[in-house]
Length: 98
Image (cartoon, one colour):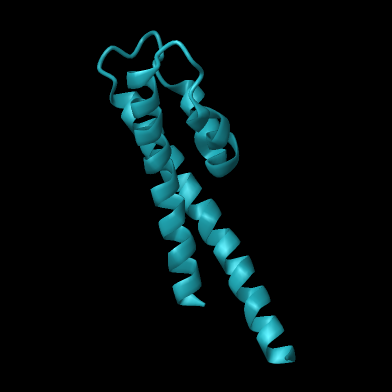
């Protein structure tokens, strides 16, 4: 079960990073179109709505933005880990009954 939780937690980290990189690449090559990674991000990175709090008018340093980005990614890792706990528990339960 530990392995399952670690795999899900790793996915919770890698998915936001891949979406960020994909967004940057899409915006570089076609800045006029809506990036597809934004559309996928709503489902694969549920805590991305926290990013709405970035670029606050009073924050000139951007340090608040970095904290919000990190917290959003950490929340996604925790969310995926919880899904991993549920998945691992169900798998163990099914294997016991088989």
